Image (cartoon, rainbow, N blue to C red; front, side, top):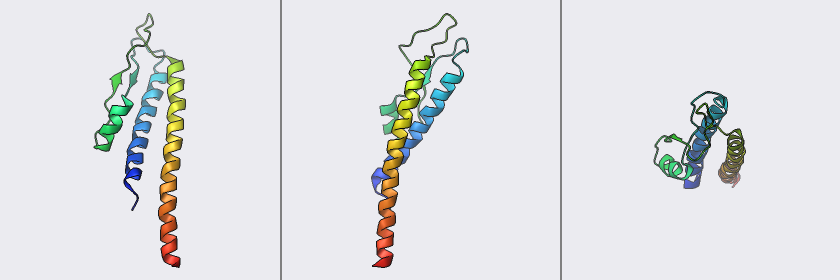
Length: 112
């Protein structure tokens, strides 16, 4: 009943959720010697998510490595958390609007 955009929003939100878990794991391991920051290639994974594939986790590149081999940047992870939150809110608002449209059509059909 929802248009194809709703399905894409659902996949997008699943991808955001997967990234949120990775960021939380990165933060939790910020003091773990040898831990390497993990992330997903968001654009590629969105295309794959639409096809039903699970996100492919990769080691984030280009980050400074400390003496203990850990490369987690709390600043980077905090920025990703904020970015993810913003994206999730936008997607959930769009999906909410889709559902409201369907609900309004149903109500109009009942009253008409």
